[in-house]
Length: 163
Length: 275
Image 1: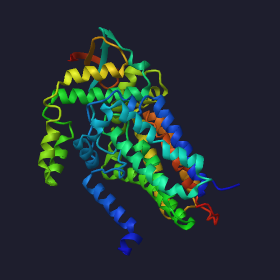
Image 2: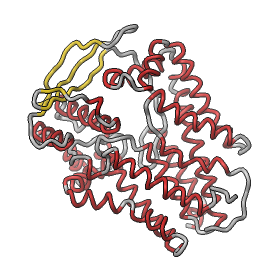
Image 3: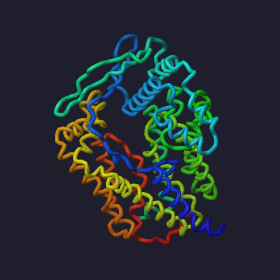
Image 4: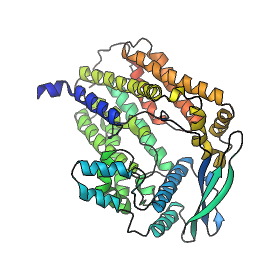
């Protein structure tokens, strides 16, 4: 016991090392590997437009950190709407983890989290709270852009994803 | 002049910085009670967060205006008490620090389970209070040394990842990163300085990759700190350059990392008493 007390940092380093090897994070042990993953050349990009009562919101007027929060939520909503069978794109590793530790029920609970909810209604309510509007019709449009080399992004299509 | 990494001074600095960043978070509308009762989770790759999401606790808290507001208030209380009462009742400092670490960690995990900002930027504010749990001067300085190694590790490991994954040797790596990072900025925040810098690098891929190499070199240089403290002032300059550069080039804000600055001043041993 006294060995553990005196050499506690040895176990912390070992734990951190294992997390690095299996590329997993566990608060507060994070991997600082930002921008080290191969970044392939991509020409397709997506942006979202929010409309309230048919009028497009100028999202550049939002506080930048709020804009990140909004954008992350819109991306997550879009991902769940497109693939309702997944919790989120990370779901496969989550399911593996729960099955590995013998908690398959928790795995299925997580898996079905968004399957039986009224996703669009929940999202509309959240948008109303986020933009602090009393009432009004909220819609979200996914805009696809093509961005070739030596050029500026050009909008190629748009699709209504809410309502 | 008293060293600003002495126990009392660093603790005071930490408390002021924590309260300031919490205030900034409130101005940014990112306190738990200001999130607008989110319902979508981002599980990331953290089993602790998966477990928390599965328990339903984050949903229970954000769906209740009372609970979320209470947590926003409770998270600042221990720090506020330490700042105001530390001189009068120092015997309470360590238990309050312990309480603060627990509450703040829980607070961050709740927020981080939703699609808000990256938790990494707040990591300094979570890790630093551990050094204040020391019961003696000797222990405190040992903790500071460990914290210093941790910061060295953050930077040098980031460089090693870039080298070991081969990202450094892909001539278009940073050009592609800049396109992905700045696409939304160029559409929505075209006049911001970081969008301008981003566009410049996109138009000059060779310079972009050269810049990526320079950043990796700065990060890699932190390995030197594991062998000597002689160059800590240079490392501090690299540290500050990285944080400011991250904002200008990537529009990523790591201002909370400034709380690590005192650990770059550990060159001279002091025998002051303060714990």
